Image 1 (spheres, rainbow, N blue to C red):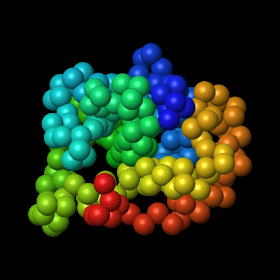
Image 2 (spheres, rainbow, N blue to C red; image 1 turned 60 degrees about the horizontal axis):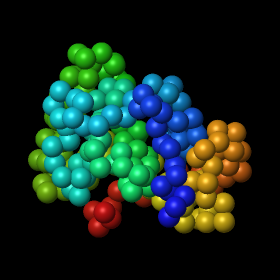
Image 3 (cartoon, one colour; image 1 turned 180 degrees about the vertical axis):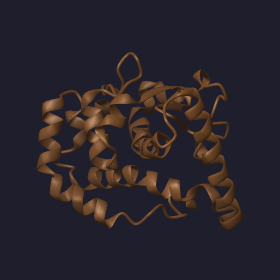
Length: 194
C-alpha cells in the first residue's frame, strides 16, 4: 500500500493534479472543464459545514458549485486511496451543480435543489433515499468504474501513473476500450454495496 501513501491527488490550492484529473475524467465521464475548475477543500471551509452526517453513512464529501468539501480525514495520507474513490464519486455531481452556476447564489440554489431532490427520494425510497436518489446513481458511476478498473488492470494499475500526466494519458488510451465497456456495463449503485 506504499504506492497509495505516495500519491498526491491535489495541488496546494485544492485543485486536482493533472494526472488525477485525467483519471477522474475517464472513470466519471465528467467534462475536463469542470474538473479543471473544481477545488477540493476541508468541510469546515463551507458556510454550512456540509456534510453533517457520518462519513461511514456516505457523508464523506459534498459538492457546492465548483467546490467539493470533504471530511478532514480524507486529507491524511492514510486515506489517499479512499479519497480517490470518494472523488471519483463526487466529481459526478459537478455537472448537477454546474447547472446553477458557480457564484455564491448559484451554490445556494444547488444546495436547495439537491435538498429537494433528496426529500423527494426519501418519500419514494424511505431509508434508502440517499443511495437510490437519481443524482447519486449518476455520480456513483465514477467510483464503480474505478473499482472495476482496479480489479481488471492489476498488471497495469492506473495508480502507478498518478505522478505523470503523459503516462496517465497513455494509460487511459491503452485502456479506452475497457473504459467504454465499463461505462456501458455500469449497473447503478446497489443497496447492498458499501
